Length: 247
Image 1 (tube, helix red, strand yellow):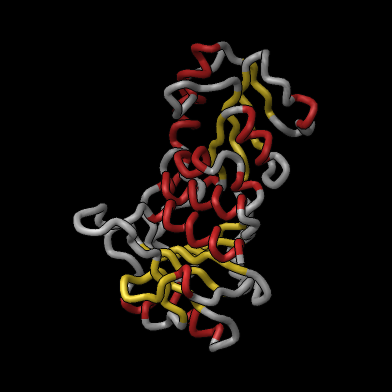
Image 2: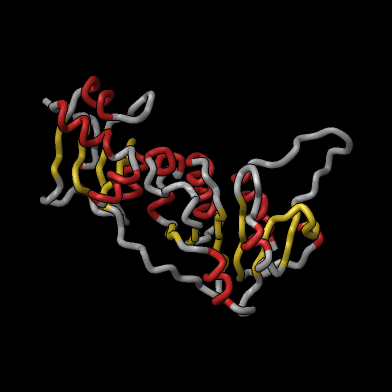
């Protein structure tokens, strides 16, 4: 039997300040939990009897068997599946740029669903690192974690002020940014190394960061006349990463 205080504790981790204070975050469902177990240490598991992940649990993990009603009360999802897990955050304060590979930088991407989808896109295209501005959504937000579908277990997400970080690169690698005055991405020579910057959902890349873009690129609009005003940032990231990797 799961008490009210336990449910309250799990739900408190929906808030960033509580996650940061306790160093914990929540993930749900067999697929997501299973993928994260390879990279993050489990703290507590609440699972129905049908969940078959017990063989991977260490002796230090607190495992609580719950029924469907208790799982529903613990969950952040409309349709919870078998397991709600509390993981320990990794200590990833050190920001690294691999100058021999592609890195995604996110400048003010605030929607958790977009961030989660971008992490999943990076995983698909073999991009191991995403560096976010401080005003980008928190990667440990439950909505972000679920949107990654387990890719958070394979993609390193860190946070840093982007302008000084970009300044430190100092011409050592190309800095690509999606801008309205950029060159057609399908007509631009692209490299297998560099920074790909994606901007805020409404305002795009901030002015300070925009000044540091060395290779402005644009996904052209093919429909003439009236059409969509812009692309969703996650969709734009997928198109951009696909074009880089296709070359």
